[in-house]
Amino acid sequence: MNMELKSAEPERLPATASKVRTLKTEAGQVEITCIDGYRILYNNSKKVPFVNLKVERYEPQAYQHDIKGIVDNLKYLNSVSKGMETKDVIELDLNGYKIWGLSRGSIETGSTLGTFCMFPGDDVVVYFYFNNLKPEWRNFETLEDYKKQRDQFLEEYTRHLKQCKSQ
Image (cartoon, rainbow, N blue to C red; front, side, top):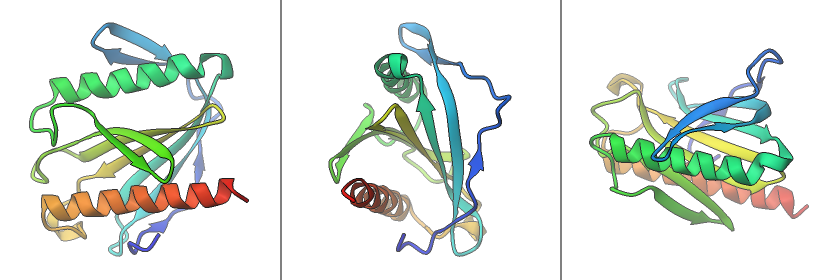
């Protein structure tokens, strides 16, 4: 990544982790079926995690159901949260990948500024959590600067993924 972010060593989801998670949606609770995963932190130049990235594999027979549950959960979270960037879930099309997410309308509150998900196929879900940091640990000073860095990370990540898939 060109944003001066450095990835930490990937951490594998513990074998003892629950394979089923329950998510809230407008229609009630739904279960999703994560069977394996990794977390990679991307630290800024101040060595503080700006992006918490999770790559998870889901049960093949439940993947489409799980995608719907995850998107419905994002819609629900966005609708019940105050001070969000948009009224509806943000949808981005980057390098042939569609990404859904929600983001705060201010950098003054909350521990997470944005939560985004991508479904690249092969029963995989990629989660992007953009951490809000104390002002002295940030590499952004304004909401617009955060959104620029967020979108640049998503753009570079999807470009890299597209290059890997084409090889």
